[in-house]
Image 1 (cartoon, one colour):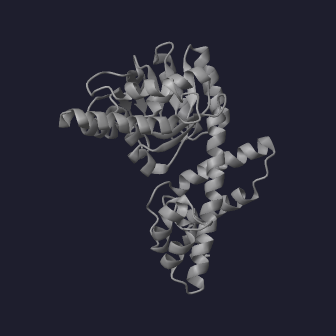
Image 2 (cartoon, rainbow, N blue to C red):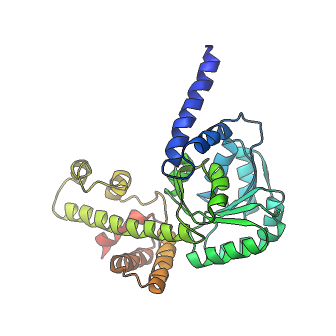
Image 3 (tube, rainbow, N blue to C red):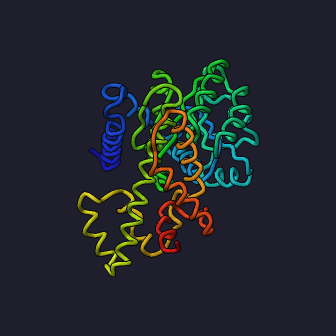
Length: 333
């Protein structure tokens, strides 16, 4: 086998391993996953799907870039035209000056915007311009209520809809290893999952419309408690005169270990909070969580408390600090 052929074979083997891992435990495991392998491994220059991506923030920009790398034909839109122009300069392809222009003729329309109002506005613009039978995939973290509302509106207009919030932060988007939690119809999910595989480590359907957003709420609940616990542990270590770095090296290898400890403890000890998801966005998400808890009757005392701690961080001027800045609050209050 020639060196070139060997490299091609190795690339396909790598893709097979990554793709089968991505879909383990889903309806896409098995023969369908293998079909996706070959779908993903088509050579650059061969069109796979015509995709529009609306919203090029710290998450959306890299995610759209992975769609290009996977071989899709991508048209982007951003409210700030300069950002769309910069994205095209870096990745090629095209941008639309309006959502309507960006989605024209797209088979899949992905979006990652700010909040419920932003999503409603982008849907109002995009839905009438989309081809009947096209699929709208929303990666924004919004309320389950607005997701169900937009899904019903999409279906009334002959469109498909998946709510698909993501977890993994900016680093996950840049590296294409996001966790994607989905709500919608199974057949729509199965068609959209290979597109999302371009930037997902795992992509799973968790129920009907709104289920993805409910899962994302569970994700944020879990993060809030873990980060507060880590912040208190490091604060206690400093107060007791322990070497924080040495402490983390030890306890991270035991039951106390977590993604947050492995990825944020060192920067927390250094007082650096410019890594990942901002406090302002976390408070937006926790507001959604607490509103939903009232509707469902769920008791979330720790989540409500940590939400107020993040409010304190905002008062310190840390609205754009990352979520690990709970340690800064303990050091100030």
